[in-house]
Image 1 (cartoon, chains in turn blue, brown):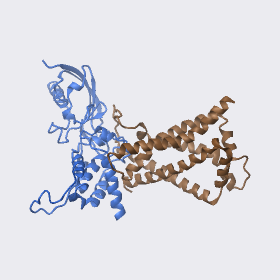
Image 2 (cartoon, chains in turn yellow, brown):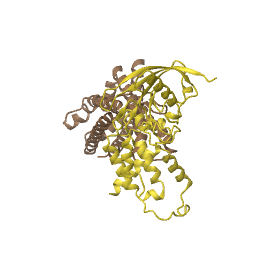
Image 3 (cartoon, helix red, strand yellow):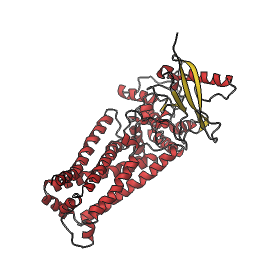
Amino acid sequence: MDKTINVTLKVWRQRGPKAKGAFETYKLNGVSTDSSFLEMMDQLNEQLISERKEPVVFDHDCREGICGMCSLYINGHPHGPDEDITTCQLHMRKFKDGDTITIEPWRSHGFPVIRDLMVDRSAFDKIIQAGGYVSVNTGGAPDANAIPISKEKADLAMDAASCIGCGACVAACKNGSAMLFVSAKVSQLALLPQGKVEAARRAKAMVAKMDELGFGNCTNTGACEAECPKNVSISNIARLNREFLCAKLKD
Amino acid sequence: MSSIGKKTIQSITGGALILFLTFHALMNIFVIISPEAYDAICEFLGANWYALVGTVGLAALVVLHFIFAIVLTVQNYIARGSERYAVSARPKGVEWSSRNMFVLGLVVIGFVVLHLLNFWYKMQLQEILGNELEMSGAEFVQDLFSHPVYCILYMIWLVALWFHLQHGMWSAFHTLGWNNNKWIPRLKCISNIYTGIVCALFFCIPLYYLIINLIA
């Protein structure tokens, strides 16, 4: 027999971007500790539907921690109290019987609430469109070993590329800054020879777009790194600062 | 101006102010080691042209640092969104000072005003105006710190200053692009020690007079 717990949920409900939101409290009984957090949310929604109430809207997709779609600010932490995982990888065994769990959407000027716990993260797509790519004239695939890349650089680029663009960094930051995201996207390309060619243009364009979209200024608190489900390092932020300043000095 | 540009100005002005504080602390400590040496330093600086150029430069640094701090803080407040989190936890590894740099900065600048009234107004300004000084530099220090209230106020101020500096120093390197996973903890450690020494040198002076006056 698996263990079950009873929890009280304080969930942010908001009808639309302009509507005034408020917390609603729900009691949910018989939650299996083997279930994931999102399965618990599904259970809540089934209960709400059976009571002829509106289910809670929340984002989710792959439910295996790679797509970056799930969000939720749970008990004061983006992606919940556990470390280095996304909300979909969070399990109910992390909670105790009788716990009150507060669930909020990402709160940031750059991520307006669409409904309930779902926020609009298309600002990240706009930043990527501003320069987070390598322009290539496609031809035959070159030999993989034609351009030597040091293991150290390859590892750093891979670590930066592990960013799934979920927005937890912005949600965690007291300044609503998107620097960890932007720096990871700049670093994964700037570290490699293929991306180096356009590094200056990319850093300038992506930072300009980030500022334009109303994200805050980084003050190096490190909250983003601590809450990042993929452990992206803030040394990427210093790299972005360097790339940006060097690009500006070369103007 | 871009977000990184504004932070670069904060880094450079802040770094320059840390250098100033270093020299300031090294000179001040002589007031308890040798009041004569301290008076000689006061004499050397006084209202000479190089001291005045330095004073104007410092004032410009403080004003720039302060103005950009306000702009950045207001922008960051807006970027946070209109709704605040009902529950928020400070993640581990996040320094308290890093989240309160503006408040700490306000405490520091508030006391700078008091400090200028205590010393600069009575010393350099009077020299600029061509008035005779009431007493020597070391005597001004002894006079002020004969009030235990001032000793304690200055000591509180210096603790706030240290919190501000220990985040500010490594943060400045970070903003100027010193990127390296190994060097982040090292820079933090160096910043803690360096700013700790600077603030401790300052801290010794009110502490020394507080103890001396309590014994006497």
